[in-house]
Image (tube, rainbow, N blue to C red):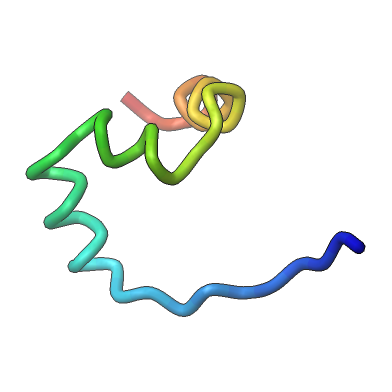
Length: 44
């Protein structure tokens, strides 16, 4: 069975972890394809 859901997060906490751990954090949360997709669409 495949289901979807919504995660409620605190943006400032995610930013703190991303600032601290960078790609290591992203690689734990997202697949390489998801990261590539987002990097292609993110503003510089």
